[in-house]
Amino acid sequence: MDGAILIDKPSEWTSHDVVAKIRNYFRIDKVGHCGTLDPMATGLLVIVVGKGTKLSNALMSGDKIYTGEITLGI
Picture 1 (cartoon, rainbow, N blue to C red):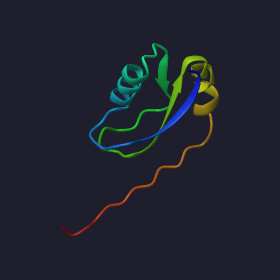
Picture 2: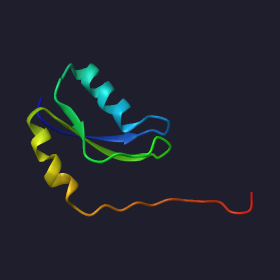
Picture 3: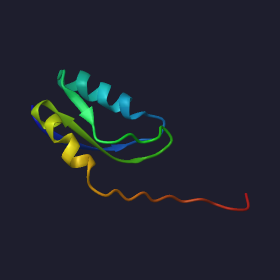
């Protein structure tokens, strides 16, 4: 398997946890991610597998947008 997988990372999982789960589920040795998300953050995590790992530099060089929400007064 070669390419990229888009994962909606749940909170409490680290980016490394997602990579490990993908590696074990698909039984692929060459798995990486394009940018680390904080364990408390949720959002899109780009996972690259097989020959797709060669794309990671190109994928990480683009602009990224981060959004957040806070509640004041609690």
